[in-house]
Amino acid sequence: MPVHQSGFGNVLLEIANEHTHKGFDHKSISQPEGMAELIALARSAAPGVLVSASSEGDGSIHPEVARAADFLLIHFSGTPVEQIPSRVEALRRYGKATVCNEDDKVADEGARAAEAAVAAGCSWGLMLSKANQAAPFTFQGPADDPVVYAKLRELTTPAR
Figure 1: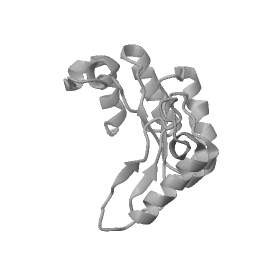
Figure 2: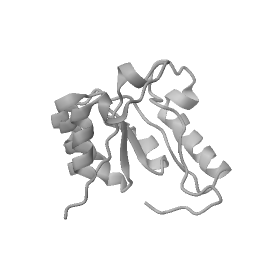
Figure 3: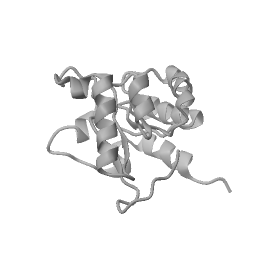
Figure 4: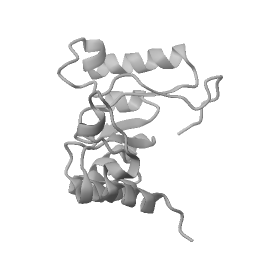
């Protein structure tokens, strides 16, 4: 992925979280063509900002949105762990960084999902539905899910 230089530094912008969600009724957001146009508009308004949009939890992104985006932003909440590698592999054709910023799997299943995503070349983001999706938000760090946080520490610790 090319690095864009601007006065914004390393800024990432998600135009819409889960733009395919039925709650969005305007086709500029809910339809791939509209989302691709919004991505292009954001990029022209703020050169150097890296722009994307996420779909719902099946680990995929519409081809038109994927082509328009600077990076691929996906969710794995509805994706079985065993399917994560093939979902990441299917996105390689775009030649862009693939970022999973939302997966609601916890404990052992969450640890396996993180490991599968990283092994496939994708980041992985924990979404604790009960703790941080509605106010009042709570963030306890590793105490939120000790099994997942232990796996994240393992995956991000350089080998000696």
